[in-house]
Amino acid sequence: MTDMIQNEKDILQHIVSANPDRFRLIFRAFERQIKIYVCRVISTREDAEEVVQNTIMNAFRHLDDYKPERASLLTWLMRIATNEIRMYYS
Image (tube, rainbow, N blue to C red; front, side, top):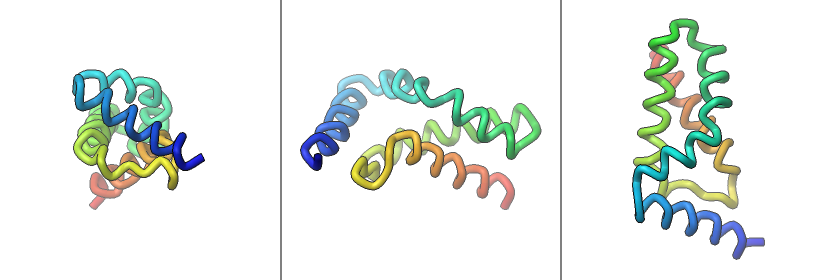
C-alpha cells in the first residue's frame, strides 16, 4: 500500500515538473467540487473565483507538501480552499 501511495505522489510530481501547465489539468478534475464548496461559503462570485484561483496557486506552490498517505488529493485541495476562505474572512 505504501509503495502505491508513494508512486501516486511521484507520478504527480513528475507530471508537474515535466510540464507545470499539466497541473491545471490535474486540478480540473476537482475544480468543480472546489468551486461549489467555495461558492457556498462566499456569496460574491468574483471573490469566490479569486479564492479558487488562490487555492490553485497554493496547491501548485506546496505540491511537495502533499502526503497521499494522509489524505486524498481532493481532501488536500479542499483543505487549502478552506484555509483560503479563512484568509478571505480575516
